[in-house]
Image (cartoon, rainbow, N blue to C red; front, top):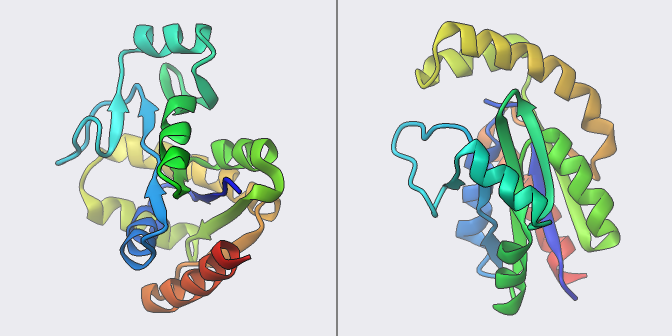
Length: 187
């Protein structure tokens, strides 16, 4: 059976850290690289962290029906899951693991249904989330304010996920996720 695990969270909740943890623990998992029109951040690499595309390239792929799902998160800031990426991972006999925005996570759960485990990573609080984004030092203050406002809205989607993990203590969150993922893989 082709399974998928979906991780979603407001930016700064620790989702990517937890996805990387799962990839280190479970050899059955393979990361699905999303496509995006946003600029590279820090040391990100095209084809490893994301497929970085121009808005025109992304819209062409939309027209070609190349995405399982996609979302325009901010104006001209698209994120999407390529069908070819999911098929590639399943061909390798692996479980797909997604690291996607909240609306993308909700959409993927609807698409994959019972073959999907959706996990929402919540910050301990919006104030803590803002502190984490500031300490990351990858965005300017205006971008951080936009992300925090968006996070408040994204928190309202938490109940649409199979599991909600509050990432207050990283080690506790890792253990909880390891248990949940193991149960899903072994079903």
